[in-house]
Length: 271
Length: 259
Image 1 (cartoon, chains in turn brown, green):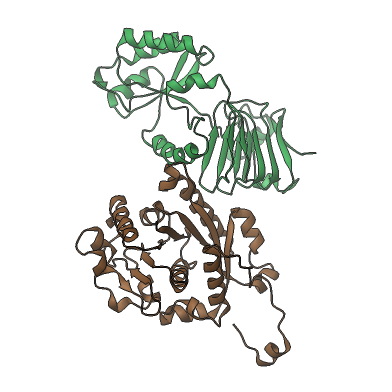
Image 2: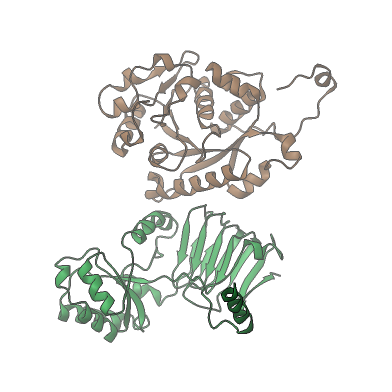
């Protein structure tokens, strides 16, 4: 049985697509057959982050409309075995997604042997976001340590537990929080919300904390999911998060200001 | 500007005869499916016999969303008279039919907008159902009225998220988690929150002035008892983030620490 994971946030620009790319790559690197679906119809970005924008021929909407089959639309990742990308359509809008259409494709993917289906949600709480979350078994709620992002995440969690298919059946969607762009130094100065503040407000399980890092932007621009950068704290933090997602006990890192050692101070090596 | 001045002096000298206050009162919808004078009266009487507590000049909104028949030919004054004779007090009409609206105006009924209420109810309904299937999401149909005399408490174990609204009709609301900013909890009775209250809490929404609100940490946007409310700014000054209870003392809202 495939596990359907939605990566959502409510607010835009917090790192949903970066997270979808990193998490799906991470799961596939551990040997699970994984597909990542871009639900952001009309504003597709996942293909760029995954560096497959030139290989898009058919897309998600084509498959829903029966203009292509899944096999034609799925793009095999060049870096990781077992990873496939289902890109969004750039020329349509969110209304192209229907509950029946999405369900049919998820079922086809599950029947095809995919173990994990990652749904990259668009921002907002409208139709596109709703379609991405409706069938989810687990939700990764991405938030930045700032008040407006946390408020929006709270709203999304409420919608998730009341409007998704699991909620309609009287079950709960498993939820977890991924805090991105975390800067322990700014937290220490009181300029940013701390992990405990956010955890307290959202009252949900913490999947991981991704430190703010230049490597994330660089990775996005180069089309290499940041999890491949095993040197960078952000890549390592994503790798830890994937471990936790798959049930491993991994201690949280990168949450406090690191005392710079003599060597680090000498070489001023910045992450 | 002499006019303004005189107005000013007047208002400071004479105490205000009234003030307008916001209030949120749940109303029962009387959803009428079809109308026949004798049949309607007979059914209403048997309903009143089942739940006499409810039929004591209870205000209702007349709704014809699911009406089967010709609305133009409906004798509204007769229907209202039957309601009044059986302990229901129609206060408003919710329908867009111009003929009905004209009749309603003659009968001094208020006209309520159509649709909005239904949409709001739909949004909150699923959340409500997953948590406590036994509790009623809203006083929408007359069939639920029998439940009212039980005064059931409603227990919610999950956090109330921003944008969610939870209402306990006819009883207490007990929340065993936090109420987020942007969320709203309402009860006809008391509200107990075993977590932080960061959103809005309105107890005694049907006018019960003895209702109270209890919470583990007061960080609320608004606290109201029977329509008397305090907002964030007034609350911040004392017992902020403390475990408190809110109660009504001579029409003013008091916040006192628990323990």
